[in-house]
Length: 360
Image: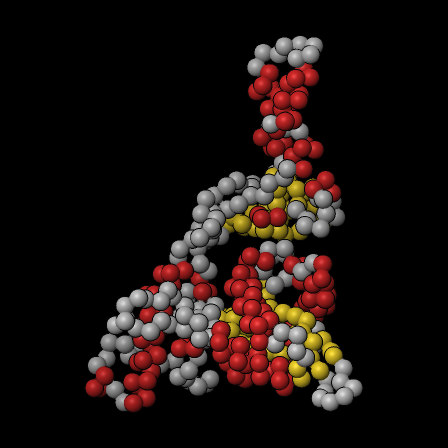
């Protein structure tokens, strides 16, 4: 508004243009420098829930992994003990939102693979593991970026040997991994209040993480009812018990009368009843969109755009041209490939700002 009025006032000192207000508005809107300073990203409508989060199955069959930390632990007890960095490796189940916490001593491929083996031994082997991309981490998180960039090949090689599909979300799109980001936030919430400034040994910190894990897996998945005669709310802990790791796929026993079942089949029927409630109560609750419920803007191929970088001022953001978009199952694109002067990068729409040049 101020820029438009200033241009109009300056012009009227010498001329009185017809429709000058609209002309000044168009001039300000098409200014490339102004567009770069006030760059606005595209906000697609919130997408549907991924298919991986809606498929019933054993816990942690499809899961995400993330790191938190560093946390400082004592290398031993007594006088002369020294502090050393450790990290928390979090696995979260896509279907039940159950979490599994592992304490690792350093950021290396060996430490990660050992944590993954402990996770598989206790929770069973997953078929898909999703993870952040190393370029998601900036600033103080450079250690995580270096770890993922250097060790991703070793992790993928191990996952392929174990018939595990290892997937990475797009760069600089941490909201694509909101499930494990929320798990990290909840884990830190309890750790700050339980541990505080105390320094624990490895065994003590592992015990605390196990207790925090039990708390997180006891949280209700659906809103609690005010009716005293209603069922207790479902929790992730309901899906973590009742089956051995090598159990075969059971028959559907939900509609079989209880009098015709053995005790083992009755336990399996109860477990299947939990999954049925999960589909009716929890999944229906997740369909609610709390944000991104309007589709604002659209990106097409050959459009000239700015690539948003949180570490640089707007005038130093890179220019690029969209060469390909990736539509989802709802036919809306949220990720695009962009050709820059130094190569092709893939970014989410939340990091792409269209320039007004294409409107001409």
